[in-house]
Length: 264
Image 1: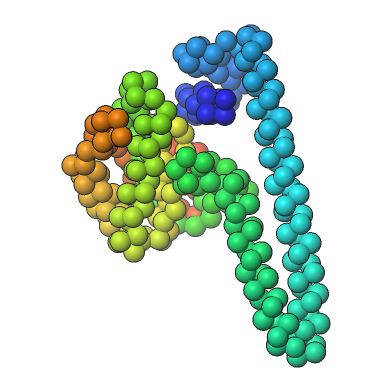
Image 2: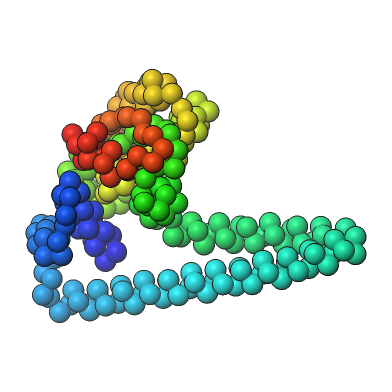
């Protein structure tokens, strides 16, 4: 259910992205249109039952996240008090113990954060991360950098003919391969899933020419690769991309609309 709704939502947002104003009625009409292409009947009772179940699970996940976050904050408060007392008493043994407890707490918080800000399929960051962590409160860039928008080619064909599993595995391969090659070049970057078959790579304070050269080399290497599934299906991975610089306080949405219109 979540994947179906996400696919419809992504396609709806992608179509409406360039509109300056999106009215609720416009969004619903567009959502309804894309839902019908996936043979979803918004009036179907069974669909509504599954939707209610999905919403209930989402609320449960949110409550679980909130509970774990509060528990972590309580642990931080306790650890801070203990650390203050240990420093006053010059208790090195207690300080060492608190240090290890804080390391464990960091791992717990990383796990919680991962569930909120990571794409569950590829483990790249998700759109929530872009808007809540990477951009400022006005959804503008916090600093200068280089942005690459990547679109997986033949995504609809692969999904419709080979199914969700093959499509997911293709995207997992691409994200892993791209990140591996960028790390080899020792570039500072973050990668996030933007819409359905589109990913964004943010290069932090890197040269546009060097980033473009690296991405183009990765593209050529991938196009020389053939993937084979366990069932024997052969797929040639391929992506197109656009690349541009961004400046501190520049609007993220305006950059996407003006510079990446050919790929969105």
